[in-house]
Figure 1 (tube, rainbow, N blue to C red):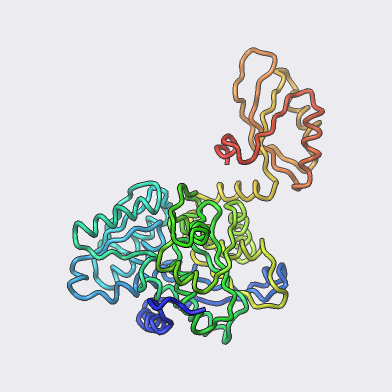
Figure 2: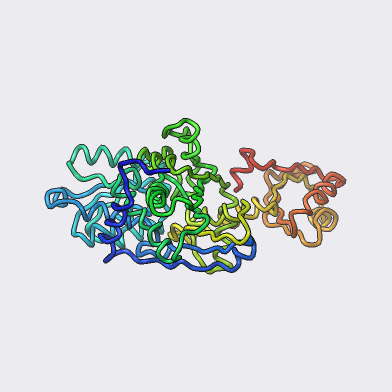
Length: 417
């Protein structure tokens, strides 16, 4: 279990000294709720409290601080889903370097605003394409055409070394290696950097990678034996929605022997809401990946487990969608097409005869209403408990009204959620 020759723990130690004056030493906090739920001693590495609300500034600043005068004069260019861009923007202002930042159209407004706030007049934002990979192609072409220095978000040894300092801090703060370390993965820079450091300094740590089901780029790479592009990605977990894992991070990840977990977007939403309501942590979707995996997989009782909360750049306008996805994931939210008789009291009979005492109608829209005897309506129902669904379906079947469930995963259901 040795890291690839390209990245050694000593380079990560050097990166830690290089970024020390600008990067926050984020807390390693006990998580009593998560510990009680799992039986393990759970701690959270709070990279959401970093200066740009994510670990990405570590890699960006480590790379940019090593540029010579000519390179700084040429400026920098990068592509990002939002967090790496904030790190680059922060470094641009701190180092007096001009930068152009390419973002996909899916980047939340909150992240765009934070990039401008960190970079000021040192950065120019260019929104292009529908994914990180689209933005990355434009950034690479820009660097080639202009001579600006490309600052990769993960596939660069300097970036990986900076991001690997998270592992170094965890070992120092805990005073000994944890039994298990759970880390989110998109392009792999954080995971690869941490794997390289642990391979030399704490090789017994069980390193667990977590990626969203809608963008399993590491799973694809492990299956193929090399990084391969995904045909499609779900952009919801924007901080980890990457079509192809980085080649350099993949080498370190494979050498270490990382365990991979994949979690659904609905489960991530439930994890986000749990962190917000219980720990008061505003995590973005990628930031909740590690905790989500912790709760969906068994851990050894009494073991020490560290989860990296990688980022907290979440747009408040997304919480409606987050709550909806969470309810669906928990089996509490369902949709139906109901053929209502066009007569007074029809809705009241539906409420009295079909709905359970703890169920609630959250959506009611006539799909088409005319002079016919019946009119179909789209009805959204939130159950008091997931176990109540079979009884609800039974009552619907016995009702004289025609009731058709919109199947989860169908095109119509995806449109609704």
